[in-house]
Amino acid sequence: RGIISVETEMTIELESRTLHANEEMKIPENQINIRSLEVTNDFAMNEKVMGFWKLEKKWYNATVLEKTKSGYKVVFADDNLVRVLGLQNLRQKTSR
Image (cartoon, rainbow, N blue to C red; front, side, top):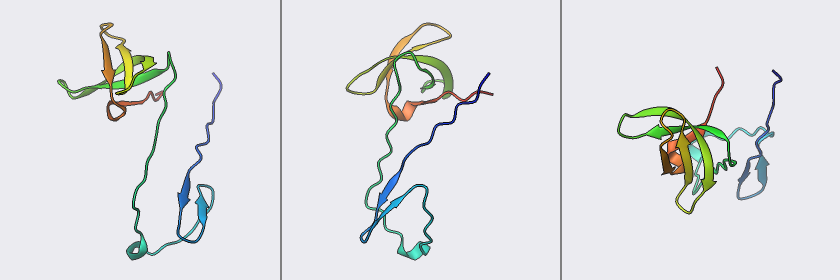
């Protein structure tokens, strides 16, 4: 198996300049004031993910079927149950 490395770009807008993720800047804790921070994840169709099943409070293997207005339609691997899950109930599958 090969190893795939993915870089994520992140930009933080400061009052005086833009700080990119690969830059380092020391800011005293008492001077940090973040008004809003939005992180978005987009999952691809047929991507293998982990879906959170609220009733059992456990993460299960799932596959993304499509993006919807309220989240992502996924099919759970164990029982082929199809559900729409919000981003808070989805995460990338980690290989172990």
